[in-house]
Image 1 (spheres, rainbow over the protein chains, first blue to last red):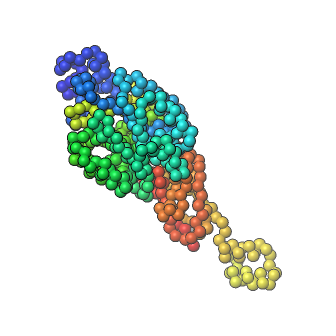
Image 2: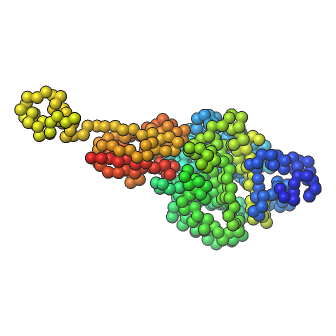
Image 3: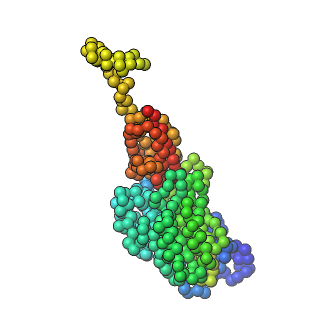
Amino acid sequence: MPGRAPNGKTNQMNRRKVLECMTWAGTGVLWTVAGGIPRSLGIIDEAHAAQPDKLAFLQISDSHIGFDKPANPNVIGTLQEAIAKVKSLPAQPSFAIHTGDITHLSKPAEFDDAQRVISTLGMNVHYVPGEHDLLDEDAKLYREHYGKGSQGEGWYSFDANGVHFIGLVNVVNLKAGGLGNLGDEQLNWLADDLKGKSAETPMVVFAHIPLWTVYDKWGWGTDDGARAIELLKRFGSVTVLNGHIHQVMQKVEGHVAFHTAMATAFPQPAPGSAPSPGPMKVADDKLRSLLGITEVSVVPGQQRLAIVDKPLQG
Amino acid sequence: MQLFTPREVWRFVLAGSVAGTLIAVGIAQAVPAAQTASATIDNFTFNPARLTVKTGTTVTWKNQDDIPHTVASSTRLFKSKALDTDDSFSFTFSEPGTYEYFCSLHPHMAGSIVVEP
């Protein structure tokens, strides 16, 4: 936190803010990026206070309702804890996005359970599917639950507080040996969707599999993700939010900030640190420090969005 | 072990003077019997990644991971539904050739079945 260390020297922080900063410094997984430079929560909070038209939204990912293996036999419980975590935030986000793998096996009861639990958030939730949400015949259930108003396999866009949000689907028609896939039809739609948008419009793109290559040996990337980024390069602020890898990863490249969220279901190993990307069993008392949610704040006048990962515990 | 050529077997059959077991041996040489082979899915890997079988073999894959996988032919000849832990899928290969397949959920997982005449 350069120049803003929580020592009270550089600004008049109240006690609450000092404690928040200290909490952040202590966890290691909490951070914000503004203008490409890590910033402290204090600065963001002040910016929020000065900007009444700020927007904060929530990202939930990889709830895998139906998963019951040792890595977490109670995924409904941890999703409920994630929602309680949101409820405890001092200011409620305006809405949420869910970046896929809502269910584990696309079973009707799994979709119903997910719906029942997530509805207790009490806010609008915008979904994109993960590969686990399209496993039933003809991938009917996802479309029935969440496909309304979407194009193709479920992509769409919407606007909130001057920010353009784009939900993409990169988990269908995957090719042997390949990574995630957007496909020509979706990329053509994206090009059309962006036509006429001012370069000053902040862009938030969300999809299940990371749009950039995190680790190709485990399939953690999207073959034609770079084509989507190319279409977005004229915009001054682009934030790409993904899930799938059940851990926080970030990268900033020019105007584009990439970020992946924790799961609410189970952690996965760091790239290459295990024989496979399968569910990672950790000590029971450590699990909740590896599961969590992400809160994203749009600060007018700041190129970067403030992205804060909040583990369930710690 | 081949005791008789098919022609010799036919001679026996025509003569009607041979034990049934020997006829069975002769027929087994002429028409491949149903055979089976198995593969597993462990740690996001098909095991073995390359499996060689005789024509007519039924291959059964069993998913031993905590995560669902599929077995999908690269030419769409066959495709399993999502296999949860301990679920299996079988396909019978009736023509010689090399059949590439992958997991349509995790397409970096690839394998092949080599079917010999």
